[in-house]
Length: 469
Image 1 (cartoon, rainbow, N blue to C red):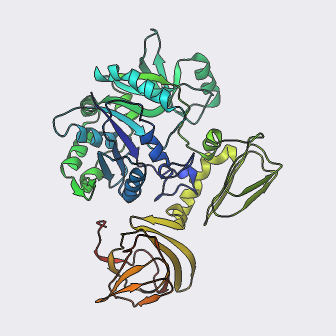
Image 2: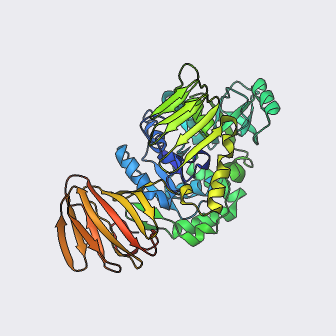
Image 3: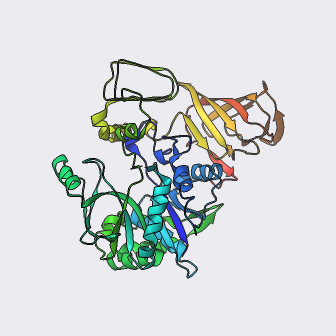
């Protein structure tokens, strides 16, 4: 039976702010190594046989980032399904199961969060392979991480180990324990960390979901039946999906079904749920420091220091986390990094954009980066990929002045089309329709100076856009 990876890429990763942002979350970042976490998730499955193209479920705001990262990893998706709103993992997997059974077929769904680190891909593939017979027979299999410490940040699974055969029957899913309880779990040997990874037949999952969460399945069916194609993406019916109850697979199905089994997995797993977890999986120096970028660290130990855009110097930092980006700096005690999400909540209350975006913002055609801003003006650096173009648009509250720094631009302004080369410029008045295109084989880079009463991305009226925005 074919295995279809279902990659869940809908999270926000608020505990890893300021690197992870709502519109550029941790699964789309290269936090460990050169590839992003999404790319690592699909590439580590190369050791499996009978593998179908992955189904990726993601937030619609991330669709072009997801598509581009899969392209860069030379991984063609079977489908990229867009969630109009987040509804947790149970509905996301239900939609994937409906996709997998749409033509009357069935397959094994390998459900994988896109934001995990797994050091030993061979061990992962071997464990998945060992679980296939149980899944084919109708079991809902989850992978329990063999614990290495009394972690209080993970949920646990208690296994029935009365027989030496695996997978074991699941006795209970347990919430995150206190330290004393976690120590007892570790000592008993009956408990595993809850990984959030699953293997089961699409039809088996839908059958159990219909029994235990029929309202959820009904809403998902309506959302799936009302789907529309948008370029290479699948858009769900927004109203139907918004009406769907929000719940995890654990709560909606796994804690209720009698078909849940657990297979131990020992593969160097981490969910990288905090900066402390990222420090644990990083390459530390002799005194426990994990440093990235241009860092000078004097007389400090067991700290995580990340320099994203400039020199970061530390003196006497012990058990600390310092993360620097172009527009924000986080300084936190390593044992309190779970509370970083409170910073994000405060940013949201204050209406600050730093929770949403980095200074450099990716777009399907390239990227832009804010360089300077003041009363009535905003300066950006815009890069356009070869062969790409921005939408035909106009602005009601701002004018723009473009200066080409490198590359060649083809510009439509009003009814006039013209070529611009390096050191040439163009003024676009308020209300004038315009489009910027890169017809060349090299990156186009321009500096844009905006002037006006409103200088935000909301002041864009699109008339034509190859990306369907």
